[in-house]
Length: 81
Image (cartoon, rainbow, N blue to C red; front, top):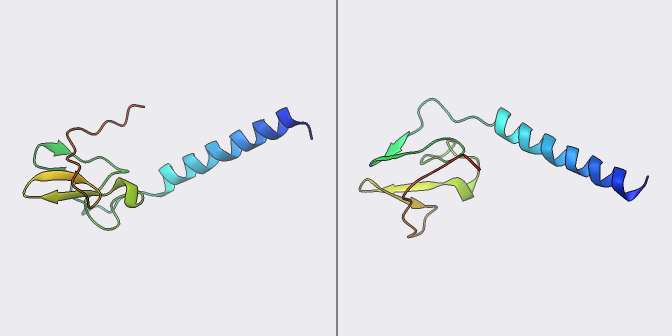
């Protein structure tokens, strides 16, 4: 198998993994959808079972959203790119 074909095969595999992760992992119906004025769309989430993985955790303290369990204030979430 030449390197171009291998590269294409790997790209297809990566796209399949991304598609599988976004279509089969869905949040529970009881997930918190907002924190203050911020809308929290999946794959982000504020409750266990509501986010894709720990990188997408939004901690809501006194209606202020923070990334993961840190002190980085989240001002906006965009799923466009």
